[in-house]
Length: 370
Image (tube, rainbow, N blue to C red):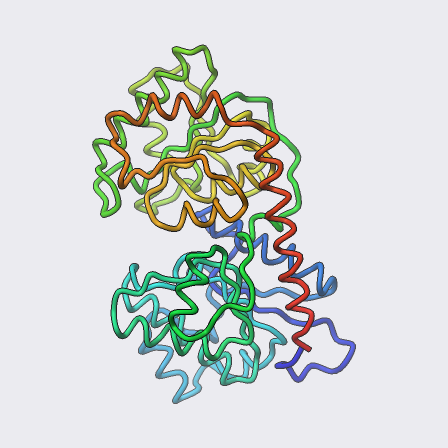
């Protein structure tokens, strides 16, 4: 790989941007682990360094866009020298932040780090991720430059590939989410149905009707139990002061439905993947809870709240699921119960195989960056 001036024979240094295994958001943690496990197959002796909001190197002051711009001019922290010390930068954008729907400042901050890394002489790969949507002229301009300056661009679903092409840079490849690159976990205790309750949707939010969501989840759990199925409630975000933490929502639902309802509060990525691997079915509002399930061959019923779910899951052949933005929440529980009786493990295992196979092509591209 090009970029670093490290001597020949020295293990390559790879910078993983916008993902870290220490993240309380287990979807972001999965991106970090999947990135490492995938890239290690191409470069077994590589050194990995992670840069995310919760684990920021002091040399990259990305608290605010103006801090990055000031550092680029003044060089007080040695940002450019630091970025030049890597052989490859792997830009994950936290999976779905290559967009302006989370605000232009976030999009600008991430784009500036990408730009300055390229200026430092280190090739930057846009890792498998959602591309778009871009609702503003400034957002589209930033995205267009980022795509043009990338050594490789990998979309993780066909809709994202279309978005990149519309901006003038067709992706080099469309591949599955990085969760499919993670080594299989040791399965946890046998359980029947895990229901992931999203803290993001439990209270007022810009995505779905919170009261309708709470009612739909409650009635789904009640319906499953009435059919004799054993249910455990799953948090897919670690307990923290993060406002969209799943744990308070899980506990609130158990208080409503009874103390005999098991709750699962994971301590890290391994614990949540192990719990999921031991289940027969996962019903989830967090996309990476669905992806973690499919990646270990466990059927899932996604309860989507954004456009990123359907194309990404469909890219590995998984079509079962509902969209909370458009499906009638009053009639949703019986439809979820019907789907729960129809999904098959062999279909989930086939989806896992498709996801893994698509990422092998990513490795071939990464190996060309020499």
